[in-house]
Length: 567
Image (cartoon, rainbow, N blue to C red; front, side, top):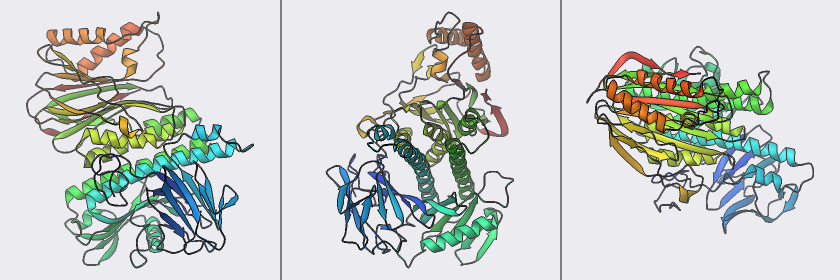
């Protein structure tokens, strides 16, 4: 299968082009049956056969479905459904049809199974406004919001699965979580839904997931076929595995109850579980748990099942994974300040160590009016940390994040994003700026440079070109990342702070105190802001990060951390 954007060849089931990162699937279909199954599959530019036969692309475990019941196909930039002379026929939004074009949020009924069609590049609001069903707006809005939240979570879990495959060379991967009926259900997978009946069947995977969840420990099948439950993978350090069943817990203290399960079946060439592999896998699992936790919080907000005010839930959802500490190095200093107003979206920032030589710094701003924006915002950090762990290009990561932003299906969503990889050993900073305020690079020699934007976050493929660039930081150079809240800080008279006052002041400080630390520079900037606004309450979020290079080379020091400030 060839990518429509760059022409590169990809495997048939690849969701995002391996070369350019553009989404390859055209739509999604959400399947809900009488057995409690609720899963989402991806539709490509090809025929998708639906039926009770396991050879069908979309398998339905429903006695009311014929073995080869219907066909969903893509033609003339649209999707169609066609009945294949089945015994019981198909219903489209309650009307019997033999062939029809599909629109956003259409419901196909086959037997007792509902198939909800979703075009993720369409706007839920537009669908609601165009609805001609009297009294149906509330139902359609509910479906739209469910589809948005499921789509965002599904896209995040696909990032997880792609990361698992890269790390483990897995043949089959699946993520399971509890549904409203209290049973584990398949949330996302690679190859499990399309495998032949003679391989690891879906029913066996379900039983194994239940077994792992009930036990609460890690299930391992080694290359020598030995099976056991263990509390820690380090028990088998140096061994190769055939199968892993990993319980997903919200807290480290939660030793017995799993809130989800990750199943990994290896390729014939089994992966040896060395220390690096185990550390990477544990980090990946932690990010998966964050995504599931955020989805659970979102559903509380959506259904109002919590006694907490919505404002508090938004704060928990968006701020639960803000970074709080960073390893300190001889090569650089770092300081951070952020103030949140607990609104939907707002300032996003992250900093984490990618490997032994690189740090990742990111800052952005997300705005939107849908609650789904909060779910997207909350999963940004785990998504970014997974992508940056296994991808080496800031541009490709931003292209992938553009697709993730598009999964809200919301036209109210606006986003800017700056991402950089900093090699602290040699001082090279590789970056991509998608529409964000240009970070300020103050050279030791007094020169000021701006790391300007070269593109934007967009759902449209043709607008996704973000140019990657790099700069070298020398000893004494200072890089300041900031959000809109800094330049738009207002005085009592309504005057905005702007950048000129900040740049002039930092340049003066650099001359007077060339050895000022990152923390001292940050506090200096905050004093300027305080003097400008006096006691005037500020409406928006406000974030500043200061990176200062201290030497030509550096070594990460263990057990030394610098705290970020988050109010």
